[in-house]
Image 1 (cartoon, rainbow, N blue to C red):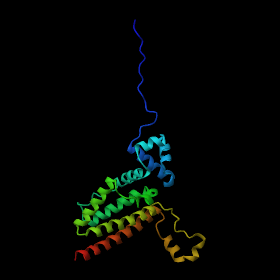
Image 2: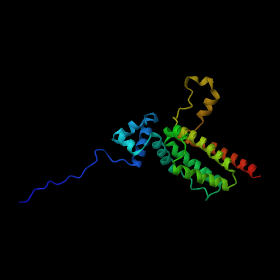
Image 3: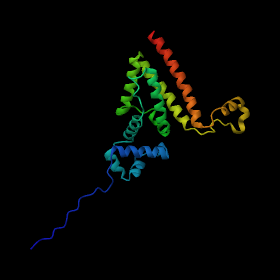
Image 4: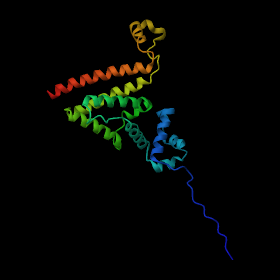
Length: 220
């Protein structure tokens, strides 16, 4: 007599499978949509529809998440000009790409600007490419790092400016306190994006001119 056998069901996970890419995507969504203060491990687990304990089993800390976010964002910054173009042209291209990248992620700037780069391979590779290009052009090592930091200072501020409202310089009822500034501000392009681009172009051009003079003095 044949014995009926019940088909064995394959076990299925009770929670969605986690991946490093998925966790990073969710963290960026939270910060972009709700702000950095909402990026907690609890909120991240809720966004991923898993338990907090399951999230901790996959990633040890919020800092680990932030490092991966940093590396993901910085991965899209173009530094390919170094070693191909003249150092100043490569630096300009890098700065423009950097600014465009963080204009899309301004909520992350206060964190990314002060987050150590350890454990961030793409970020370190980016810095290595820039430093090598500058040092090959004659910049002393410490000065090359200073150039990088100076460019980043400009880039982060310019990224904020790229997303500023059109009326940011409108003095409203206090125009009498700054009549010349108010009049001059009205002469800027009405499109806030164009106005931000012109200000960035001016600042970057002046910075590069200063860097060229500095390098000439150092090399001389």
